[in-house]
Image (cartoon, rainbow over all chains, first blue to last red; front, top):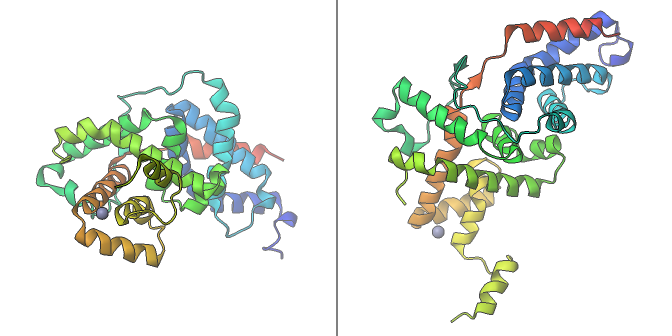
Length: 198
Length: 93
Ligand SMILES: [Zn+2]
C-alpha cells in the first residue's frame, strides 16, 4: 500500500484522490473564472481546462498542500495564455447578470457604517451587490483579479504572489491601486446611499 | 519652511521622513487584510485613537473591503460542470 507516493496509484485511486482533493475548489474556481471572463460559457470552458491540466500534473501535486492556490494559479495562467487572446473586447460589462445568485453568508459584521437599518432588507442588499458587481466588472482585469483573490477568496498576499507570479510588493501596490479605482467607481453610488461624508 | 526641493525629495525618498499620518496611510491595506505585524498593528491602533482623519480613512477602507466580501453575489456553478469534469478525467489515460 502506498498512499503517500502518488505515482504507483491505479487510475481508480488517482481519480478518487483527484476528485476528493480538487473538486471541493470547484465553486470558488468557477466564480473566479466568471469574474475574469464575465461570461458563463467561457467560465465553464476555463474551469474544465484547468481541471484537465491539473489532472495531467496531479502526480506532482503534493497531498496536503494548498490545492486552492494551485488551481487558481493554473486557471489564471490558462486565462492569460488562451482566453485573453481569444476575446478581443476588453471586458464585457453585463449589468443584468443577476440570474442564479445567492448572497455569501460570511459577512463580516464590523463594517460599522454599513449597518444602518434600511440596509438590512433583502432588496437593498441585492442592489448593493449589483452595484458592487458593476463597479468591479468595469475595472481592468488585473485590478479585478487582486480584489477577487484578496477580498472575496481571502488569499494572503503571499498566496496571491504565487498565484500571479509577481513579487509581494507588486501585489500590495496593485491591490492599493485597484481599491482606489473601485472606490472611485463606487463613489457616486456611495454618496447616494449616504455613506460618503467627505 | 520647507522648500519645494525638500518636498519633492521627501516624496521620492520615503524613508525616515514620513509623518505618522503618512505611515498610517501606508499601513491601511495591510491592516484591513490582516497582514500587518504586531508592531505595525499597535502603531496603527494607537494613532487612529487620536487622529480623526486617519480613523475615518480606516473606516472607509474597511467598508470598501466589506462591500466586496459581504455583498458581491457568488454565481452558482452549473450542475453539469462537475459531471463533465469527472467524465473527461475518466477518459484521460
Ligand atoms: Zn493621522
